[in-house]
Image 1 (cartoon, helix red, strand yellow):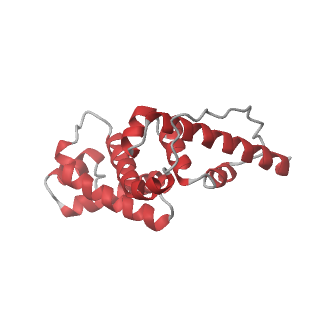
Image 2 (cartoon, helix red, strand yellow):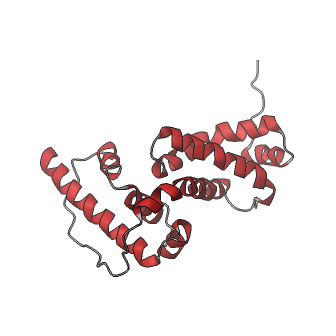
Image 3 (cartoon, rainbow, N blue to C red):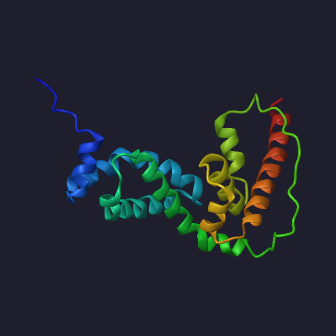
Length: 184
């Protein structure tokens, strides 16, 4: 007995462009974990992340005909998931943006060693950041957006993006120092 031929990502995307629901489901299942991993970084909890992923896939299926097959699909999907998750959080973040940061000076400090910490420890520390700081840290440090792009996505001044990133880094440094003392 032989196994059925494997369907390629390109074939799935091609069939999604025709509106084929079976292939849309295949695409969803193929990239669900990837999209959820991204969404969780920008969401308050798993339920919010799941809603953002589902909303993102609806956008993907509605815009799939504009997808350029010469570009990696994951990159296109990532952009949609990040933007969808940010859009969902924008209302929550606006409540935290009531402080004018235009004239605030960035904080700085030296980082200590993190040799004894694992990924889960670091992710746990990141999740202790205020939502706006975590969002900007993720966008800038993990997803590679620049401050102009972040400011545009979150409807904040560019200088506020810089300050929130600086404060996030400073807070992480303090938490890391404390954590390394506890593990050391």
